[in-house]
Image 1 (cartoon, helix red, strand yellow):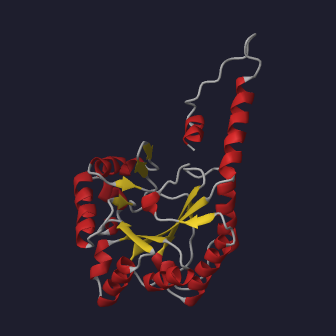
Image 2: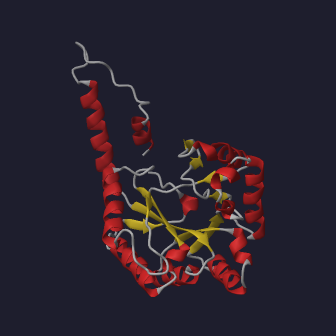
Image 3: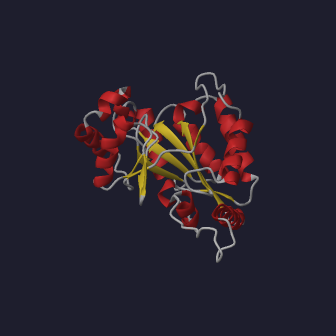
Length: 263
């Protein structure tokens, strides 16, 4: 997969067509890409189901579904929510005590839902993430930034909106890894009515894995939100999506802490 990254970043040099080299560089590049894809297609595919904004109404159901389906899931938590009621505190503790769930940092305040203002002061934003890390006693320095699809880990730096870039760089300088998402699924939480059907989301995941269009080939991160699953309709849809993905014996459900799987 590292070779594919290098190919996608145009770091590999193909000799020009001349009397010694009879292969056009474009043809050589295409053949190399095809051979890499063929090898990747033989490997396992890694699915990261991620749930943002918990604990909320819906978190307990997500926890139960993960247990019933025996799959790993990822919870990006808002520290403040765990302090809002005894019920939500219990729901956080269920996540924290479930070996099939890993808990990560989604800030303490969720930026007060004023993202531009929040990210305009990187030092205060860092304090907010630190407070979440400490208040929930999180084990991994892994962050998803509210309102931003930003990735910073290893040698990867991908920023969607510049207003979050300074905060992201400060988080990284303080030892945090930041993860975004490849695919987002939306469901109206109160009604359980999906914006995209189970089949639409499943097909998009399958196609992106097939055409290697995720950030890292053979790895796909799906973004959802806990409050999507506060009623039976939404919970049934989540179960149906998991069942669709489990049909593929080479699809493995993973923790973000192991992202990306390399070969």
